[in-house]
Image (cartoon, rainbow, N blue to C red; front, side, top):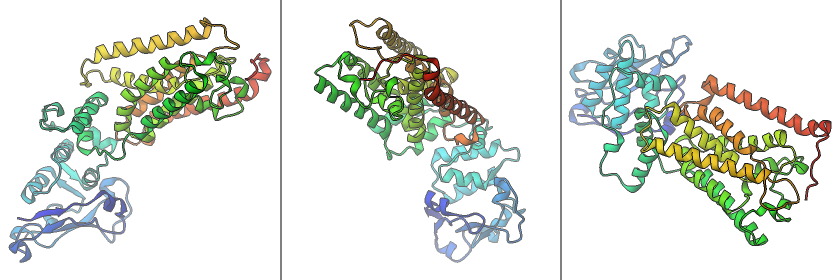
Length: 438
């Protein structure tokens, strides 16, 4: 019996041009009968028809002609797809996989067969096979699996024994973040430790280093904003320095005191790192920085005299996005004690906002100027519920294919444009009294 030794790698598939060349062939170890041309299938590839017209859609895009060197009983692979449609029946495909022992991951094979049996004609599309082997999924692929007639195995990942410490952590992350068993299994089997979730860890480490440096320099570890030298930092956002645009982002490295830094660092590591492991660096960094930028711009509009410090805008964007995702997919979430954890998270976040309001309007000590605003917390929460929820609900799907993503992006871009004009013209037009910058 022929057995596949070499798989088609993701790099080979990315370099493959379906319009000009054939798919890289699967390597087959041939036995004596195969070498004689009388054994099972030993090699196959799909090539475009030379006279085929240009057509759209994945099924027609990969319409091709099947070739084989040897097949049991003298039949050809052409019989599997006699009309050259690029489809193979689900039963035929399953039999072909089992007879030749193709080394597909069990989870991938289950998904592909479920996808095929959800098709009205019960067929496997060649493009979907390529996407599965290369660990790429489309929204139609995901929906077909979710609505397939053949259910995936009932045993969840929690039932899998013999896992190491790291794989147990990956399984925990899957159940913490993803609401669907199909997505959890997909993430668990395709997860790789490289690249690690470096963004949230790097931001947290940088915040701790900056806080320790200023704490040692000022000899003050709580209520640092009351020190006259603190606001002279080039990182703090101050309305008198709003022309220095970098301050709208760099204020996230400065904190009022040890309690604010501890709260933000804890949430960034507990929520931000798992989110980054599942959804990737680009999406989570975009969400975090969008919350940070929205926080400082909202303060510049609604609390024009107040400075801003702390990474609460980004932290609240992450937390609110995750909590909203849990609520929207409550029945599918399998994280333990989810109701208790949600209540505790809301209590902690509310207490942090209350503390920021108290420091803004009723400071415990006299200060030379207004204390940092709390509006960044609320702006981050709004960004998380809108932009963040859209990102988290599009796991393994391209954001540019989601209509809701473009709506959210347009709304955020409109807000940024308005905030820029506000900071350029409104302060002078309204005659806002701004305390002199330090």
